[in-house]
Amino acid sequence: VQLQASGGGLVQAGESLRLSCVASKNIFSFRAMAWYRQAPGKERELVAGISAGGSTNYPDSVKGRFTISRDNDRKTMYLQMDSLKPEDTAVYYCRADSGWTYWGRGTQVTVSS
Image 1: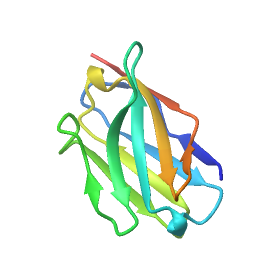
Image 2: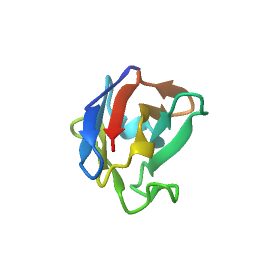
Image 3: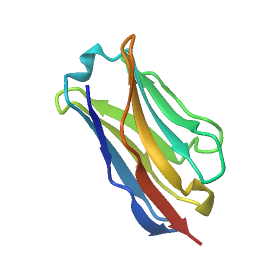
């Protein structure tokens, strides 16, 4: 299984970005999918998670600003990021779990002040 993340870029504080993660197989089999991020010198952290049933979870740092969703027909997971802050700058990774854990390559998000 391959995961391809895209949609990162350079934006100013307050702007929005939408990340996409396309899977090489039907995502019905994934019991959970998630977005993580890793800033320089910091550990990788969970940004948003979504279960097969559509339940979502977010850390307080992004709650109300980020929205995770999945489109099973398109084999794609999304992360809508609004009201971006400089502290959101990081490499963003997508992850999928089906008993095995799969990671996509990261996409860089840079938010300037």
